[in-house]
Length: 142
Length: 410
Ligand SMILES: Cc1cc2nc3c(=O)[nH]c(=O)nc-3n(C[C@H](O)[C@H](O)[C@H](O)COP(=O)(O)OP(=O)(O)OC[C@H]3O[C@@H](n4cnc5c(N)ncnc54)[C@H](O)[C@@H]3O)c2cc1C
Image 1 (tube, rainbow over the protein chains, first blue to last red):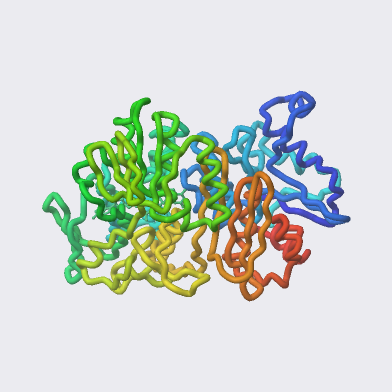
Image 2 (image 1 turned 180 degrees about the vertical axis):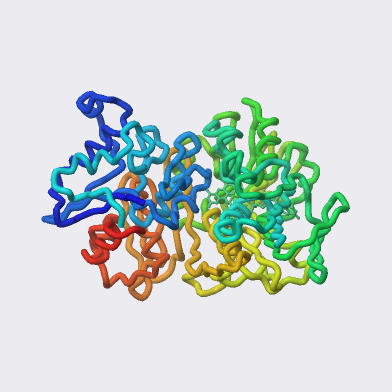
C-alpha cells in the first residue's frame, strides 16, 4: 500500500505540509478562507531543531497500537488505512498514550484526529505531499 | 474446528479478529452473559455524561459477528467447564462441545464488608451498561450521590454524573485519589482540579456503618446520601476456571501465548494473570489495551499461528473534566520531575531504561513516544535523553533510527 515517507535530508522546515493538511481537512475549497487568521490543527507536524527538520504523521502501522488501545472502538483499519471515527471518539487520549510516533493529536473539537492520507476527505490523494516543494515527503509503495 | 469463547467483550473481539486472520472456516461461538451486543465498557461513564450514546458506543460495527462468521449467544451464562469431555454447561440446561476454549470472563466488583450495606436501598456497582442504566434511572437533580472508591472507576462515575445531580461525595480508604496510578504530587493536582469542579472527598476514611440514608465514617463524620455507588475495585472473575481445576492465582495463570494450564483452554484480559514485562512477574492488568492484545494473542495461538505477547505493561489514559492523564509502567529507579502551572511529568529510569511515566495536563502530548520507550526496552544511551526527557520527540533518536521510523513501512 502507498504511504507517506519522509526524506529528512530534503526538508526545508517550511511547514507548508502543515498548511496544506489543515486546508485539506477543513472541508473548504478555498485555501485562504480555510487558513487565514485561524488556528491551525494539522495532522502532520514538523519537528525542527537546528538544521534538522522532518515531518511526522501517521505511519499506518500493520500492527496499529492506537487501534488496539482505543477504548471506544473508534479506530479501524481498512485495506491498510487506519482511520478514526470522530463521532465515536470520546477524547480519552488512549491513542496518544499508545502511538510510538506521537502522530495523533486532539482536533479543534477535542476528539482525536490523525492523518488518513486524504482518503477520507474530498481530495483523495495526500495534499501535503503535493504541496511539499522539495520532495521531503513522498507518497509511494515501499 | 469448534472455537468457543466465554465472555463477549474486548478480549473476545481481539481473539475473533486474530483467529479469522488465519482460519476462515472454523466455527466460532461466543457466549456472553450480558444481554447486549458488544459495547465499549469504559464508555459507560461517557454515556451518563452525554458524550456518547448506545448507538455510538458499540465497540464494533453491527455487522461484526456476521462478517467474522461468529455465532453469538447473548444473555447466556456458562455454569461449568467440564475439562475431560471438553464440554460447557449453560444456564438454560444445554451443553456445548469445544475443541479450543477462550475464557474471557473479565472482572467482577470487589466489595469490602460494610455494616448494613444490604439495607441500603439505592445501591449500585459501575461495571456494565446495565449498571449505568440502572444508576441513570435513579438520578435526580436533587440526588446526593455517595461513591465508595476514588480509583479509576469511581472517579469516572463521578465525572459522568456530577452535572446531573446535586452533589457527589467520594470516600476512599487511601489517603489520596487514584493511588494505584499516580504519585503524591499527581494525586494532589488531580484532586484539586476535581474539588474545584465540585466533587467532595473524604480520604483516609471508610464507611463504618450505613444507617438509613446516612453513612457513618470511621473518622466520625456523617455523610447523607440518596444513592450509593460501590467502586472500591475489581477482581478477576475466575470462578469457572478455578472450579475446572485450572491453575489460578488472583487471576487465571497464562503464558505469553495466553495458554492456561489446560492444553485446550486459553484465557486473557481482566480475568487473567500474564507476564508483565518490567517486573518479570505475572500481573493482573485490568486495562483495555491489555485485554485486546491478550485476546488477540490467544486467537493466534488457537488458530495455530502462535505469536507471543511479551511486552505487556500497565498503561492507562484517563481524563476528568478536560484534565488528561497518561501513566505507564512501574514507578521505580531514579526519577525526573517537571512541573508547570498546567501540568506535571515524572519519568522513572532504571538501568538506563525508561520504566515508568506519569504525564498530566499540558505534558500528555505525544506521550506514546515515552510508552514506546518503555515497551520496547530502548537503551536510553542510544538517544538524546536530555532532549526526550524535556519533550517527547522523534528528534531525540539517532538519525538512522528515525529513517527507519519514518522511511520504512511499519
Ligand atoms: C467504568 C469503567 C471504565 C474503564 N475505563 C478504562 C479506561 O479508560 N482505560 C482502560 O484501559 N480500561 C478501562 N476500563 C477497563 C476495561 O473496561 C477492561 O479492562 C476491559 O473491558 C476488559 O475486557 P475483558 O473482555 O477482559 O472483560 P470484560 O469487559 O469485563 O467482559 C467480560 C464479559 O464476560 C461475561 N461473563 C463473565 N462470566 C461469564 C459466564 N460464566 N458466562 C458468560 N459470560 C460471562 C461478562 O458478563 C462480561 O460481559 C474501564 C472499566 C470500567 C468498568
